[in-house]
Image (cartoon, rainbow, N blue to C red):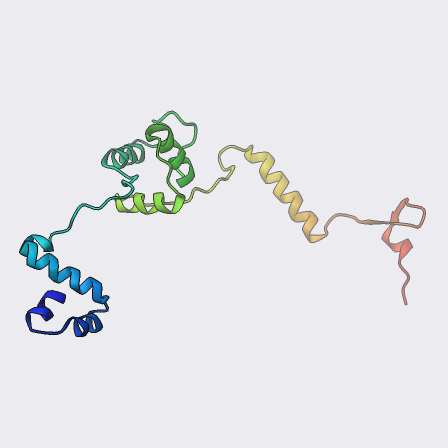
Length: 164
């Protein structure tokens, strides 16, 4: 935009106002254009921290998600993001936050689910049903109740309550 406006004969101050660039930035763009022409439009390599997520990391991620935790030597059957992150940290040495890892899993085409930790299939069914019935009885008050007297010994309800 800066070069187009400059080519149309606009002043540097007008270009800076329209584009939101500083006057120094407009001057730099014009100077680079004069020196290098079309090469000045190409993006330069930038210094900075290299990305943590490499193609190797993504490959390890895909491999772990396809194989599942049991095949990777774990005792659980479903990956959680935290467990997956720990596994990948051991394999690659790269630690990512759960939010970033969740987005990566989604980008790789996998669905992120949160496992429900229940005891279904691991409990004694007969004992479980008995305990549920007993709990239902306790909740509904079907049990014969006694109330303590002033000396602390339980007595039947009828002796401690007075009809008015």
